[in-house]
Length: 379
Image: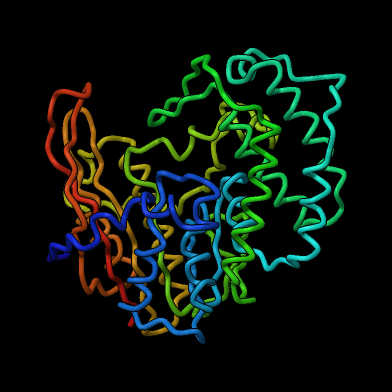
């Protein structure tokens, strides 16, 4: 394993969370707690000297923060994501809209009069998450929206409905667990109409430049991108031993995408030599928890793809967090340094943004984990 030189960088501590996006128009259309802030992307773009002639990639694009932040600065970008909900979120937030045309659809949708649907979902899973009236609103609005032929307007309204549905649900998300608790919530139809009015205003005020921000359903371990075609990468893979990214959207994926509550992203077969590469790269690999071994098997593939698609001299910033297990802490940044060097990267810096307490059963301290930014370069 290569030498890990850590640089304390507390100026990034608040930027590696999604919190700052709460008050930023368009960024705040969808709350994504696994994401980072647009301000982090801005800072990294400046640090990496990325200009408007560059093409930026986020192979784990999530809710599209990297892509939208690049678009705001007039920089072309592309992103890949396995979760179909997040593909929709990223696409709706970064699309070039005909605002006059979209305003007509918004006006029509705000004038729709509720009609009770003949059939509503009866599964116990959804009945626990929504009231009868919320489900009726959702089914009726889905039907109206799906009749719209204009893709940009249809997807804009559909995402606004999904966001409204979750605000009007009884769900409570706690880490990787989605719980339900009956309580008073606003009607879904009312939230939806407020959403589309407010989001249209956001677009008009933002004045986003017409710069390409391609969003694609795809796997970071198998990128359909030409070798040496990308100038810079800003991304954050799923954190080690953090299953939330797979399970927290099971209600939305079931109700709006028809996927079962047990859905997981498709796996990709690893190369036969990957285990030997991992053993050679990471000290004590065989003693790691099985989840960590599987995780690093995927990450070495993803890092290999990042290296392949970058141009010579291209730079990558990768935000990662340490793994908190019941019996130990696995410092992800030191392992990533080893993997990055294995696939051919130079590791210029490891910026430690913050340190977090790792506990078991919420009270027993196991240790501290680092949340870091790896600054990589392809030479």
